[in-house]
Amino acid sequence: DSGVTQTPKHLITATGQRVTLRCSPRSGDLSVYWYQQSLDQGLQFLIQYYNGEERAKGNILERFSAQQFPDLHSELNLSSLELGDSALYFCASGGVNTGELFFGEGSRLTVL
Amino acid sequence: KNQVEQSPQSLIILEGKNCTLQCNYTVSPFSNLRWYKQDTGRGPVSLTIMTFSENTKSNGRYTATLDADTKQSSLHITASQLSDSASYICVVRETGGGNKLTFGTGTQLKVEL
Image 1 (cartoon, each protein chain N blue to C red):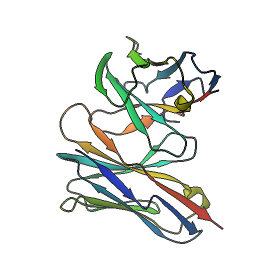
Image 2 (image 1 turned 180 degrees about the vertical axis):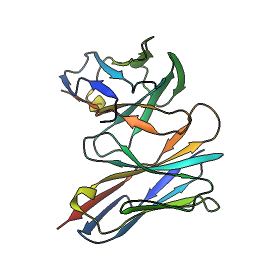
Image 3 (image 1 turned 45 degrees about the horizontal axis):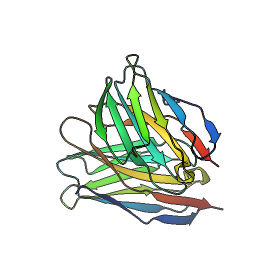
C-alpha cells in the first residue's frame, strides 16, 4: 500500500462526457502528480501540483484540468471525452527531496 | 532535450534465468536515477535509487549499476521468477527544485516456465 488513494478505480462513460478523478496523497506529501498511461504505452506526465499551486505542466490537453485543494487532495477533470482518452490515470505523491514517487492504484477510464 | 531511453523494449526469458535491462539518459544536471517496477494494471513501485557517487546497488535479486560518465544504468535480475514479469521503468531526476523527472518508456519483461 503506497498510501496514495485514487477513486474511482474503474469508470465507463460515453464520448462527449465529463468525468472527475480524485486523488488523496500520502500523509505529509505536498506534491501531487498526474500521469496518463494508454494501453501498452509508457507513463505520460500531465501535471504537478505543490501545496495547492501548479508546479509543472506536461502533455495535458486543454480539455483536461486539475486542481489541488487546501486539504492537499487533487482532482483531475476530463471533459469532452474522446475514445482516445481511454487509459489508466495515475496519481502520485512524493518526497520533493528524494524524487521518489508513490503511485496510487490508478483509475481506469473507458470511453465508449 | 532531456531524454531517457530504455532497451530492450520487451524481453522474454525462462524462469531461473538472468537478464539485464539498459537505461541511457541525457538528463542534466543529474541528481539521481530510479528503477521502478510496474505490474500490469498497477502503479509503479520504486526498486532502487542510484545517486551520482554510487556505482552498484543491490535489492535482493535486483542489482542496479550506474556509470555517470557515460550516462548509462542497468538493472540486472538474477534467477528470475514468474513474479518478475512486469514493466521496468527508468526515471532520472534533475538537480534543483521542482522535482523534475524524466521517465523512460520502460522494458516489458515476461518470465515464462
